[in-house]
Image 1: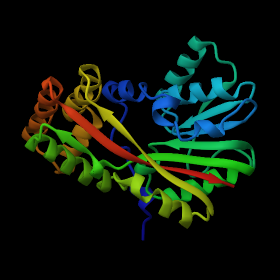
Image 2: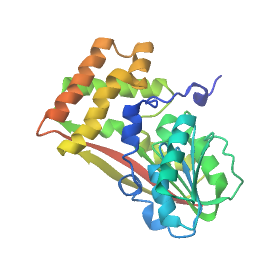
Image 3: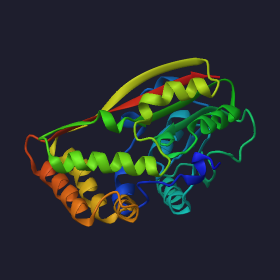
Image 4: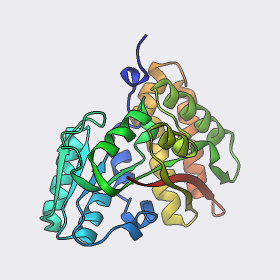
Length: 271
């Protein structure tokens, strides 16, 4: 019997429309729950660091401590390195790595963080155990993930309803869990964590700028990113449906009363 992780595939891919939205993320808008636990001198791991914007914020907060960002995609790691170099940050580094087998010694960091990672892996409990391995006694493990099924929007739209159906089916076909945020506490307990604080927060988008950032990106993803190519390849959506989804997102962006909110689960666990 094959494991779920052997079938995992990153649903979103690394199309510019994806990386552009990932680069919007900061420690404040995506890791506020962790900020009270950060201070100067800590060593931090940011797993699934992507373009490195959150990672770099951590580096500024813990200096002279060090931060390492690890991601599976070499091209994204290269982008993060360039971004850090331009910012003149010397206490942050980036490396290509495997979330299931980190190239770090036991008890080597004070904080291990993962944002929007566990929804994409086939064995999230194994990844959490690996994070636990590298955190020093008394240190903190922190992870945050979306609950796609909890998203709400207005105006209502058949196209956006179909987007949600396609995304849910595709993410699960790729061995992921699109509602990961609601399962984080369960996974943390299964991984053997005991000192756990489980919270939630919400991303919401309503201004013209925010609607363009979120909906404009999804309008593009629905036609040109891995979301589109994988949905077609696996027979989850037709090209006509993807066009309708893309148009529905553009209509939402253009709607003066457009509003969207999506919850996230968060975990702080002390080792």
